[in-house]
Image (tube, rainbow, N blue to C red; front, side, top):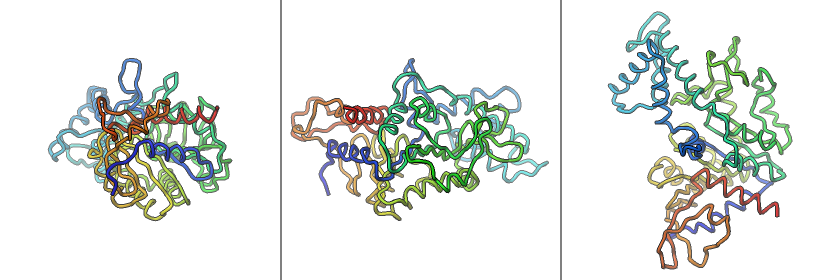
Length: 393
């Protein structure tokens, strides 16, 4: 086992991965990505799960809906969940909807009250996350430019659990064509055949929104549509709850999940994970099945913070040597867990170096401890931008 991992060597390896145009390359973006970006007031671009929960709860209208929200929180408290987040609350509401009869009642809720609360929560979530991508050079912009900078033999594939529209805005801002499973303009419809055929040119990126989107709706016929003028009174196809395992078996979720399974089965596939807490057991299982079933596939999970904060990611890395976890102070690479150490002689003054590593101050030893920065989505974007700039020289 190694005594340490070299951040320069690992960053170089990632650069070589990014340069590839003849192997399947994907990104998995989760809630930590927009949270890593800052507004002008210094606050995150979008709140984390706790902040989102507080905002949704505070915005419930007075009356029956607010009372239902408070009752749901009280029930979860009684069940042993002292601080339920919005995912727990939606899980609870949707679980009760499965068992309550049309005229019945369960734990103080009628079916109508549960349906109203479900809709109100989803509409408020949509209102909160329906924001414009800030002007300037965000990590989403940098990722999009990187996607468009390389002629590709395989399309870049983006998998995301986020239901905001930030990545769509970035791709369109930089004129990167993409396909998200829908076809049309006003009432774009979900086209399973287009996904299965996959005959679009590889310069078109693929965007797969695994947990739905704020601009997906159910129409009167029960079909999923994508609309640009989404009506908040309609049923939003966003599912930030632990029931996603069951719900993902319905279209279009099944097709989106199957795309990730298919991607991981391809020879030499590489997927970069950013902003993911590994709280979704269903997705964790898919990652594990993918790397165990395909010894040529490689996963790099870039984590912001200490490795101990991600026990599920550590378990995946311990179960498969082609699942790598790179945290701020240590990493598991090829099954080998060790801290980061940089040789003083390896330090470089170039801009790219500062995007992925910050040495601790005052160290005189040859091996320097520090922080590996690519677990922060903003740093990852800067790293990609430096790569694109070098290609343009």
